[in-house]
Length: 342
Image (tube, helix red, strand yellow):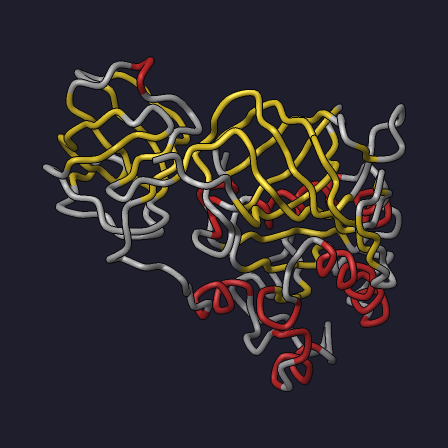
């Protein structure tokens, strides 16, 4: 829930011997969190290597480099552009070193030289100064409004919670809720308890819709202005196969999983595989199946229609994951939607 509202993710990794390995091994939480962060639209990932003051680590540069060396190829596989979107930093949460104040040179002699040289994409000494320096791009305030509904509740009317992904929403506007195409008037917009005259992209807001019932506003719906986003039950996509359940070690047509995109969740079936690309770049047209580590162009059918867009048009509505049995099987982007029906 939190990740779908965030622009920046802070991935906290333990440098303690054994703990890093446990979180990073197959089935570990480090892998899951990085995959989900990218899918849910986190722009920047700040990787902090924590517990650097621990007796088995003692601010060791070798251990720091070892952790980063293992994380880089994995985060690249998740879809992060390492040089642009990922920042690395050693910290100690227990005594606050490098969180607000820089670690003393007597404790860690190599960090000052490293950040001043801009190594590991970081040119700020502390976590706070790094977060303050991040520049958010790709927010278009004059585009059509898109607010994926995270939740809703009733308080003298139905109030939808969500993050403004594009456009500017104001009280008095007419909006369309997808996929039902029902039209409502915006009675009010709040940020927490504060009434707003308008809300721009990146803001988490509460939107009161005039005359809407709880049944008409559901989690996963999208509040739009015209032209409204698409609502589809078929899509052509590119997925990266990350893991597979124990009883199905290959991905074939007929593979079923839960489809998660923005705030929506729906049952999905892979109906056709068009081509696969292995780790060496070998392309197989008309492949019958795909293995872990391969990139696949395929068609997916959903049990019900879901508000979506092609990734190239609206990245935040065009990313998704496929999950089954508590594990992320694949991450993907939507390449093409069916033609609009006139």
